[in-house]
Image 1 (tube, rainbow, N blue to C red):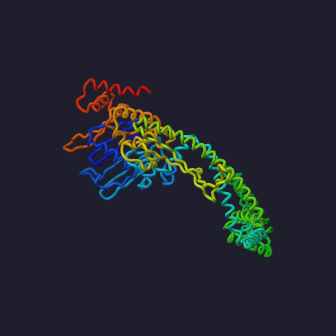
Image 2: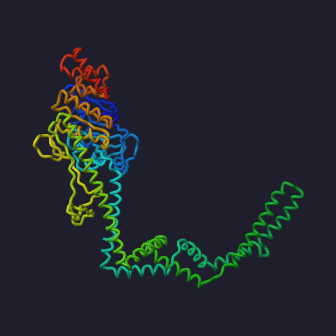
Image 3: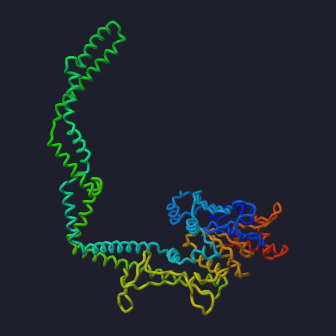
Length: 572
């Protein structure tokens, strides 16, 4: 929901901050007070273009900021992730406008207007301007119909079948594309397999072979140096161990005189033992090292063969082995092309039967749901004063000679239809509001209060299927009054159980049902007019509803009428 709207130096607004509530938020106020300015600020957050003329006279920068919470959805989260904007419990949209530039921010990260439009379109529907109404975007109609009908399971079955057919067709196309050069491909794969198998690389051998080659290449030096060290430490007449033995003997005599030297005596003894052990190890090592030119050549040849494979097939031994597995699968298909082609065709025929069955079940159920939606919305239109209104959900499917879906017609002929990822149906909402007129696409309905009431009727029926959490109405009461106004207000209150609604109205029948009532005023502050907004308490709300009833001085009778209107919201 839109939790907070903050505006500074925009149009005639100096600075204001308003906190909205869940449910039905109603804005009232005298004509010219600035209600439309608030809607204009909301449009900026929807990504509309801005100009320096929007800045309050005398100010350098206008700011509009909205704080949203509980608006997470898979689509919204995906947009944020793709834009590398961190997902947070609260989403903040901000526009800053100067004479030179207009900038957008999402959670304090710079954002393009295109991204802001995409993000806002996942949260807000603004009724009164066609470009911000999700129901006027045909691509939303199918999802709304499926959501209303609870068709997620049927659609999931269809989508799985669609993916299966798609994968098999890709396999078939790949197989057919290779047919022309089948022999060349077979020879190449056979050569590559033979070349890799001739070397038979092992996953961990390269590092060990390189170590062995290094030792063999330096065998003479390693053996000679080890022997020399052995002599220095142990075998020579003046070896280190001899000197340590002499030192130990002399220090032991001194320790008999002064016991504080016993520790040093023991250290020399341990050192002599350690040096002797090292000398023994060096002797063994020296004797184990043999110069072996033949083995060195073998190791070098092996490394050369491994390097050749790496250079040709992937850069690492692991990549070479993975490539070997891959081309083995390809080779198995190539050497038995006819069998592979037959297997794919059989699998594809079976998969298309499964897809066709799933498509028919889904389409049939959509037709049933469409009739329910059409009847329900038509009833809502009549309830909202559009007695000639008729709403329908048009579902079309398209014949396609190469279509993946094949169905029997009434005369038992098989007809192929185009398959889409979400079914075989094109879905569009159509409507007529006048007797004798043909149904027309919803996107072509008239603007103003009529379209707002149509949208209200549709959303009232599809409330639980609609993903958008915030609805804004700024022309909902044009051309209505009396009992119709009361019915419009009741529908809005019902819709507010599933959505946050922010609506501007001049009608007491609608204002009386507000869960949060705000008044927009234009006082003169320091010699300048400024738009302000404040939330009304119960008594103030009662007084303002009464003022909307009379349009003049409020009487006790008008207050009683306002009270009766306000009590309606407690009846349901």
